[in-house]
Length: 290
Image 1 (tube, rainbow, N blue to C red):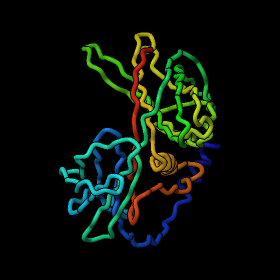
Image 2 (cartoon, helix red, strand yellow):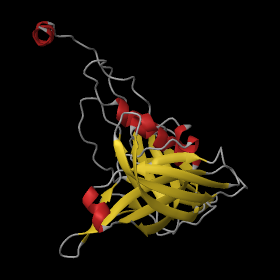
Image 3 (cartoon, rainbow, N blue to C red):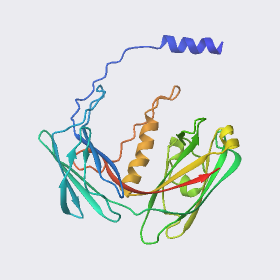
Image 4 (tube, one colour):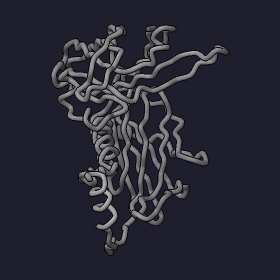
């Protein structure tokens, strides 16, 4: 009877609703997550309306790059995005000013952080259930040394590395993380199923922090052995705010069959007169064996 009732509800309560969608006022979109020690790559597009599917890159743009308020160069379009010749340096501020013929000029700036320090890392075989009863079988214990001179922000990404029968390496990102460490849980992002962990040093500024992170690996990989690639990024405040809003935004785009859609979450942006993000990070990479 319950099944019949549900089918009756779903098949009999349909109607057409006309919705007036406001006309979209396009703005320029500048996106760049740039890394310390590398060149800056910037994609430039235009915001689209709800009925549009694709925003092609825009070429007729003049982008100036400044380092600590000193002009350095005009970025060059390489057929897909704009790129600098300059190599970024830590503790340095970079500013871009984008000039358009058909839209308002845009600008953004950010400071490159320093590379984070990993003092220890280890993997342990475990069997632990998350809050929904899902069993995870691996535990990463990561120790970070945090400088005392400033407020710092971090992003942690994990990638599994293994070999096939022909000796070729292949890589599988960890897409689900679980932890009960307050450094992470206080960020309020785990319920959005992030594909990386972003956090601040609010609870360990100037001290050493030990973070336990749980993830899952195929049992065969545990038996034969695998390599865990750990990417710990020191990230700017803009990067931190952007990533937190990004995970909420993506999660809330998924419809819920019973409760309907979530309230849309606006994306954080530091682009003046436009949308997007211009944010820096510095990365420390290590590998450990299971």
